[in-house]
Image 1: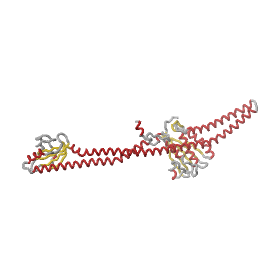
Image 2: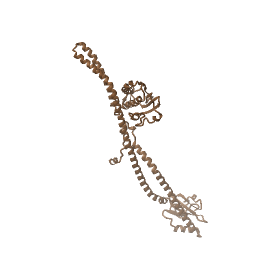
Image 3: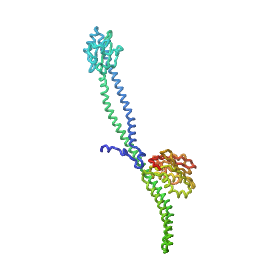
Image 4: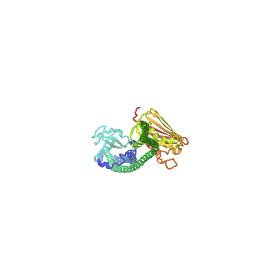
Length: 462
């Protein structure tokens, strides 16, 4: 077994290192098997057909040669017998001195099928009805029959002129089979060697091709995997700049309140100063909690860099993403409308993928809208086992020429240089990795709507 493992190609037990779910990876083993089977079938089919045709034609030719030989023997025998005055005596004398060959038989019967001479296949002289007289339809002919010993034979007959006697020559069919089968066995040997060489060539070529495809796919997967992480890190960097701006205000409050507390403590006042310190301290604590909430959002987003399946509250996911972008929405006067049904339960999914999907789609919508736009996020049941997530905007829209290309890697309709063209491509891959589906509809000047369908797995009842 260890020696066989040396011949096992690298793609045989392939798992997509960049994929998050095994079922989304390419099944290279299946591709290799299909390639080998299809190519082998197409390569070997003509070979088998020609072999069968050769067997059939060879058998037919040999049968015709045997029948022709038997006809010549019978004609020669009838000719020599017919010149004799005593036909019966002449026929018997011919049979006694003739040599029909190994496993062959020559004898005389009358019209009733009674043997007039001893037969190797049909019995002793005088045996009545030994031969089926239905065989003797013409003056002469060759027919297939089964002898009394159950052996299949080829029977040639000729009526002796001006008598009721019939000269019969039989050949064992096994002898005929040997004539065409033995040479064909050599052909079978060559056929087996040819098949082995063809199969080895096909398997070698298929293994080489699939190995190259596997190598290219591995590089593609790793590149997209790195691009996905780069996009995630870029999102974290962008969010971090927003978080820094958001934390500046609480830090200013902390600085101000702490300065007042220090001033009150250094002024050496009595109890009245303590009464003023407590509210200031509470303000500091509240502001610290606010900073903690902001940083936790960022840490929670960054924590889901690695894929993990967990129970997800989709309302919480949408809220976390929008919390990072609310300052930008306020600055650009973008109205955000949220419509999430309360009956939607928690379900198992990759939370990090969901966060990245919502973030990419909402950022894409922000980029498509001018100041004062409208963003709508709606989540509802499609069926009992599926959710429909809709992210729509009233931005510039996507042209019909571009809409079929937006999920392609590195395709970007942005005219500036900051668009990488990876956002929607990564979004498409993430949706597929969590067994979902994503579709887009858009009208230029009217807006764009992305619709995601997600399966509900291991639902938790609320």
